[in-house]
Length: 280
Length: 247
Image (cartoon, rainbow over all chains, first blue to last red; front, side, top):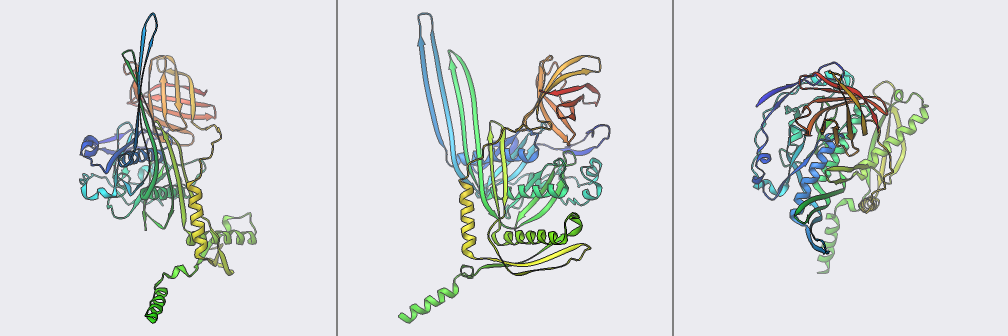
């Protein structure tokens, strides 16, 4: 473990330094073979829209892997064409493998997360049935929360920022519940993230974050997934070309009861507001 | 035997959940401060307040519905919608009671509202059915402004070298940079973002011998079609600066 003070400069000249202790990646990331059938890893690259979209993408990918294990239909198409002329013989051979599934996934939740150096997000998603079969996650070394970077960044006026009272300590620059929102695995918990928009207030940003958090809770309970994964292998003469095409569509429709706000945090670099909620 | 049957039937009726035979009734208080609506008359404030109380009552009786749909294609999030719906039919019993709140300028209203079980079940059922079978609406071809789009222009180095640079910020969120003359390019990772500027960290995907990796790129909005570009190395020394224009 080592500490890195990033010289992150706020345009044009002010300097804000956020302290991050960059630690080793988790075991499930370095050794994915230890995962069982009820666990899957989803990945998403950095996204200009912010962390909410990045999380959605990684969660959708992990849930698709889980649903494909439960039920999927595979279709393999082979074509072999030979064209013969007086001058030459052209041989074209294609394999098209299609894997698609359409089903409802219930009781899936984020167990852990990891952000790599390039900002790529990896999420470990589990099914509730896996509780007895999974290894415990390694403990995290945290640093206490400090409001100083947020006040320096000035996302909003000081008196507004002082109302954001984060209780959780930080790990790699984010609160622990960002990585492990469902640490107790008994109550349903989720998080929502809202970016700062033009002319938005802290109140409206929090309202949007809460809606995203409620949607995240609903998705944990049950989510309808329709996915298609196609791989095209084309061999012309002896040259192989490969192309992959995948699509995921998810949908949820549900009634939500009362929820309780457990914690709140604002990213001092992006001014994104994170909320952590629990279903009552 | 007949008496036992009648007795069992009466016992069954008594043990049935009460909600099957009763309406759902709630009493709600809503508050509004007149100073938050300086352009409205007192009557208009009362109307707004009553509307707020009714919405609260609907939420309490019918609950809150969340609908979401996400569409991802080949590493790009093309659509991510979340809808929060609060609705239903209620009846307000009696007259709403208005009074002064604890703080200066505050007005409070109390209402009692109800809906019967059949109404609640019917509304829930039809809303869920409608939303599950809803087809995604066709998106109008709206152009995203702000930093989204393709930007290009010439930038100058600290040794007076002028090169072309191109930046892509897609509506799906992917951001890339290319230096055609150097044959290098890579991904842009957002480090901090505001309405007027964005700070990226650049990670090269190719051209590692020609360009510096892990530099900082800052874009500053000048108008809707023009942004300022600055690039810094890992020691925070300026490498390039210039103006880029929207293509």
